Image (cartoon, rainbow, N blue to C red; front, side):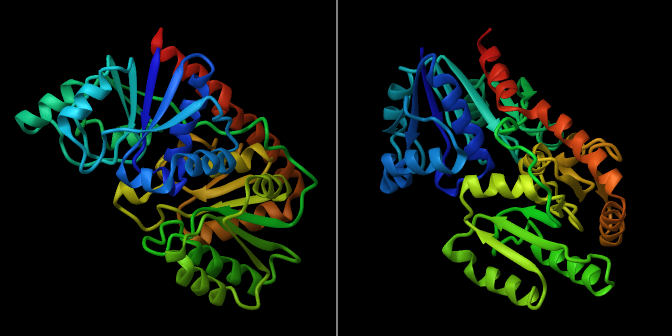
Length: 357
């Protein structure tokens, strides 16, 4: 069996890319897997992408081939039809666009609520008809997409390295992990710093520090500077482009996990669609105190394995409650570890393999 995987934004090294490359790793031991490179990705080089994706996501992609393909913007329609006929299965991470595929089986992955109705016109209906299944990363994403994408679907939660992330000796760390994205500022690190400053001023922290980690590109440098200025004279540490092993250690050492994506937003695309970093933190025994919206509510048992807040005042209240009650912190940390296991990489792999049965 030959499997093709196409993700047009592999070089962003985000959650969707980890999802697709974990599919590649999972299937490569059983069949031939080709990751298809469009014109933009070819300019970066298959060897570079393979090396970086393996390192950043801690994946074994040795058996996966990264090859040029007539796919993506500017590619030949006829060449693509002829090329894809050689594959038994094609996985495509769609950004809302769709194309006619001639693989024997075609599976779309949607990781963010997508507007637009691909079957509104004849050409859209024809293209959609060539696809067999949509896999969503959460019920939240499915709920806000399925009326626009009339196709058979199921939810397969993203893979999380719950076996590799372990609780360590806990420190007085509040951790938040998310890209320092200067354009959207969707991880709302500025809100977290302001909240931390208020807690610090109210003398409710006592030696606690805020740890902010995540990817950052050159275009995000001004936003990083803005955040560092906002955090001046506070015990706030920044970890842009932190390596995987260091992040795993940070998860294990941290006691509380903050997440604010989705706060004050009405647009579902601006909310957290699942929450991989929340699950990773939970695997390390870190108690999540996260915004009550998006896919986060599918991860956390309210009041058992974490806390869900609606306002910054609640974020402060729940954080102080945990800090002042070490017994509650330990109890919820253990429950968080148990809850995280339902999103393990092994469970993900089993569900992907069942797509053939």
